[in-house]
Image (cartoon, rainbow, N blue to C red; front, top):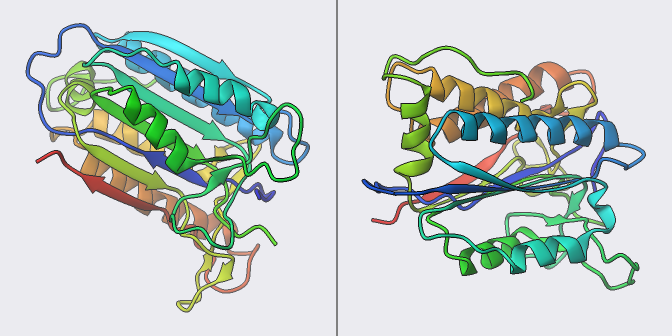
Length: 280
């Protein structure tokens, strides 16, 4: 589940990479589900919701992509709605799908995946309802065959017993050119999760399984993804996902060390994980 300081685990899944020289018309399908009414983490999820909504608008405003949105708040009991959105995606072969979730997450005792399940249930609670897994989301989006897919989940990964505008120009030309490198010229797959799987302190003495947030910053991982994203856009070198993801991981680690040092035993570190697979 998610913890309060406030806990969130973050997964980004699926990012195609490698060049697409003449993409033609491109639509960014932005899907946001956030547990904004949870008693403990609702405020931070609402911050995440607003930040990612703003990021989508920024990307669309500063690129040649159209924006199609699927935004849902109070997501804890919106499993059917999430499945309906994913099952009914109609995307072009050059389109981008960006799925984002902020809320509670967990893993089962026999899970083989390094990524969590989202605590999104049916409208009517069923005792055996196991929410929605990141793997399920990936499968459904892959079935729609977008050129680029990004799946990002800010939720815990432990066992269960931008509204601000980005401004400036980059040394590599301008923000539009950097966005093109990330979203138009990209194919392949990236999986990104904000916390190592775990349920306490691991053999290295690091506190694992949790991703953290507060009502001001939102999720630490979401916050540092946005910071790394901005850094890539303003960089003097061509933007690329490898550098952006590595920066996100390190920035999240550094950020968590400062903010968690008085909160937890052992090494108070939130350590994201990611995997990048290119098409070639």
